[in-house]
Image 1: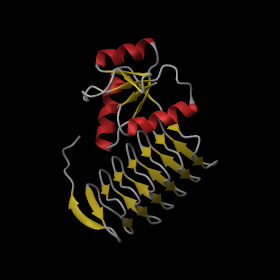
Image 2: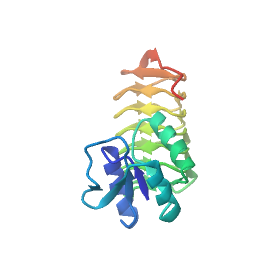
Image 3: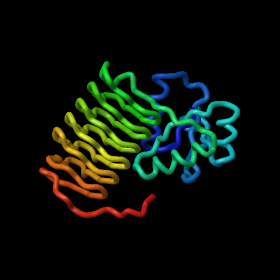
Image 4: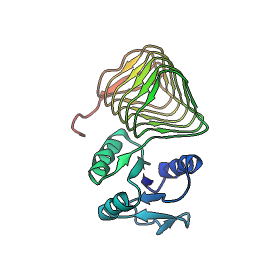
Length: 215
């Protein structure tokens, strides 16, 4: 498996991967950082070019996960690495608690340790549900959503595509959050949030409209 990124969150992704599968054939990709060794932790190869990635996908393993945050970057990496021949996969920590009924976790999601996902949940492709977050019943989470640690999403919520929910935020029952939104850390969201909005506070209030030209 290829892990995109070789710093920060990618190291946390590695821990999930090695706890659900063998360490054989795990490699990283980083074409930006200049201070990385040839082997991460003296063990895992770091690929540096698209050509190396394409060869790895063709000859060894075409599965990959995105070990970087930021919904926009995740979408960009998804488009790029699929064109190189990769197939994005989901990884789900053995220390997460996933409901037994009507749960659909689509491809490319990272579900971290301590996460609780109850029943009747849809999580669309390419997202992150980070450490100790919870998602309540009958909630739909859009594509490439990043849910930071210790977020609590109540039942019957809807989270739009490419939205970022900061650490410790609380989304109250039935709230709908639009596409391309940012929910600031520690916010308590009590009412619907329109597309391209930054909200913050307790209760969360509109702060500004976000640019619409990132994709």
